[in-house]
Amino acid sequence: TADVYDVTHASGQSDGSVTAEVVDPSSVTGHDYKVVFDDSDPNNIVWHLIDDTDEDTLLKDQTNQAGDDDYLVVDGILVRVSGPDFNIKSIVETQNADGPVDPPDNVGWSWNSTHEFYVSTDVSGSNFSRMNWRGRIGIDDWEIRFTATGSEYYDWDTDEKWPNRCPFEVWNIGPGTPDDPADDKRIQIFTLDDDDIHAGR
Image 1 (cartoon, rainbow, N blue to C red):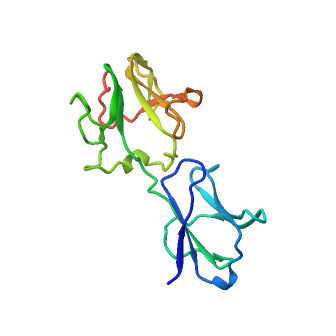
Image 2: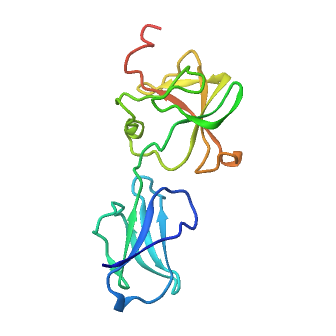
Image 3: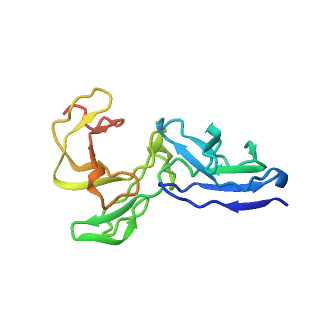
């Protein structure tokens, strides 16, 4: 059987994995290699295989992250890149009116720490794929912050601003940096009013 080696995750945020399988020992160079991801187009994330010893890009703009055997062999090695499901990883409560929730409490189809709310979609069970229905979820973390002033919000279909305010704010807090406010960005809120709950207001 072929020798398979795990690869060290050097930097960045990901739950994916990379393995290196030696399929032709006579072609192995003994060089160091690295896999680099390019997410400049969030709808088409690609990866490159680089010979770190020669500083030479051996494979460029690769899209396969299925973890199957359909990868090119380079220098006698098959590098298999397996991406995680492009979906919501978890939905947790980290703080409430009384302070931090430690450990964070799962609220995805599960009551929060005070049994007052949970988060769901229009898909039954724990499937949150609906939240990524445009395929643009990315790798950043997000926060819903309940505040006294809340936020203005708009109708998705008409761009019209609703006359009242919703009781929370939505923030993009960056990839894996929950304690660093430098990359936090407040997001404008739109609602998709499928049930016409604001009709006749």
